[in-house]
Length: 439
Image (tube, rainbow, N blue to C red):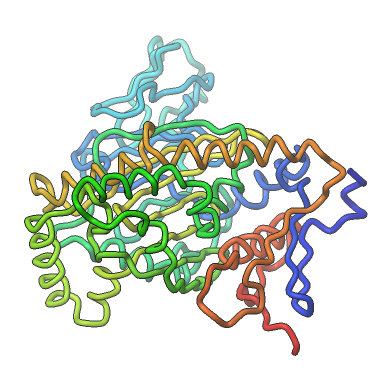
């Protein structure tokens, strides 16, 4: 490839309706380092959900933005987040992914911290000098903010208020949280996987409706086969996905793609495994209660629309068949870790709707599902293809400058405009939407 200085990273040409991204954005260590500093070092990053630590002493640990962290509910019920490093010599203090503890003891030299992060135990403390002060050696914390149960952290010294950074993303988080009458909770367990591809490819994939039918053809053939065994017409599942899409840029790089959920929600009923009168009755009962609780307009958005949502930069919420939380953690230019959870209404436990929701999730998103392996193969194939350095740009122009509601790559363009501004250290764009080309 030519030197980066001679090649714009993003080509955005509204007059011609052209949008391109230089492939160095996916392969360059220099760019990866800039992302660490200007994106993951300064933006509010999603860490977890408060339902993961319901009781005092409950904790979970994560790697977020390249930092080891753990989140704990202290003895008074307050959510706290600490850097997972002992203030003595640096060893990890929290060594399990989740659990319950009254104290956290470093295995190296047995320094001990309580759930508020205070240093409460130091072996041979009397042998330290007069300047040794335990009160100054507690666990350190990033800045922490919460919204509707979602917990965020920021590593910068002077971040904007969380709600200002969320901007229009608050509405999407509200729609997710408002599904529940008794509150949304993260299910036990997680789906972890690694991909040999850049993190931004997975972000793109999550809001890319263009790839659904060609990439996931096997999944749709499977659904059509099941439909045929139940006496339903075959060969219509993929066509049902060809529906109007509404893309909304929410500010600060956040964007949502919203479309009618075929068959309605809270479980998309086009999946043949979800058929039957009993589940339909449950869905209709939930819908009626939701409309009564939220009002007609908002209730229908919750019960009839599905959402694919990018929270810039590290969270994807796929709120369609189920509510899927996907944390994206960059490891290297060509390596990404994915941590995935299911968020469900608390009142669903024990219902047929909950069982069908899990079936739907596992058949599509699960580790042995018919979609996630396709997506991993697709993005890894892209990363491998970038070795052909003579082809310099990816094209993301689909739907540029179009006012219709057809399939579009606008969600990716929203993401990339924010990304491009931040890694240059420039102010964020005032508009993330496509400018309409002159005619």
